Image (cartoon, rainbow, N blue to C red):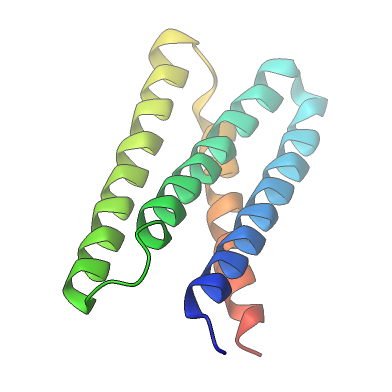
Length: 123
C-alpha cells in the first residue's frame, strides 16, 4: 500500500536535517569571527529550520484531506514560517543585538540546503 503522507514526512524530515547541518556548518565557519557571529548564523539558520518544522507540521499533520484544504494548510504553513523567520530576525537585531550579515548567511544556507535536499530526492 502506498502512503503519500509518510513519504512526505520522510522528505520533510530529511530536508530539515539538511537545513540543520548547513546551519551548523555556517555557524562553525563564523566562529572564527567571534561567538556573536556564530550565534547570529545559528539564529538565522535556526529560524529557517523552525519555520520548516512549522510548515511540515501544518501541511502534513491533518491527514488525508481534499485538495483545496491541503493547499490551504500548506499556504498557511508557509505564511507562519516567514512570520516566524521575520520575528526571530527582529529579535536578533533589536533585542539580542546580533550582527545581521551572519544571520542572513545562516538563513540563506538553510534555505539552499532545503532546496538541495528536495532536488536530490527527485534524482
